[in-house]
Amino acid sequence: MSSKASSKSALVGIIMGSSSDLTVMQAAADILSELGVAHEISVVSAHRTPQRMFEYAKDAADRGIRVIIAGAGGAAHLPGMVASITPLPVIGVPVKSSNSIDGWDSVLSILQMPNGVPVATVALNAAQNAGILAAQILGASDVRIRKKVAAFKEGLKEKVIKSDKELKKKK
Image 1: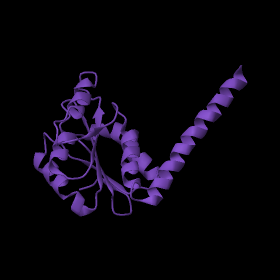
Image 2: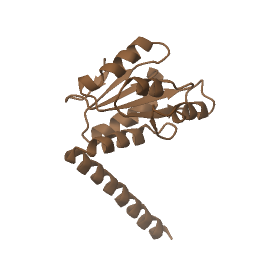
Image 3: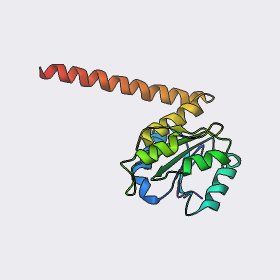
């Protein structure tokens, strides 16, 4: 079912409603690769392939997936529908798409889930944050991943300190 998978058995499933969402969703795959987290990427549309979506969500845990990142634009039903089927944590990425109302429709569709069907929601087009959150979820029980996330965050701190020093040199 995946169009791209890492060499190990995937722990994170990255799905999107359309291949046009890949320009946004690739950031999740990139950060997961950087953090050494096995993942797969698939196009699974809630509206155009509902049976495929149902099967993906139903079978993900049995295939070894531990977290699902679902990106969707417009009405953005994919994350919520997947969350209604799977017991796994689902992270929704609202995508500002060509049929989007400035992205707000996607944000609200993913964010405003009913009680009992939670979807962790990141900012508009923030697939990298979804990848980091997926790694943090996995890192809660996997020391190797937790250490890589900690090192990544330390690197962010170092970048800020370096940019501050460069800014002060310019004055």
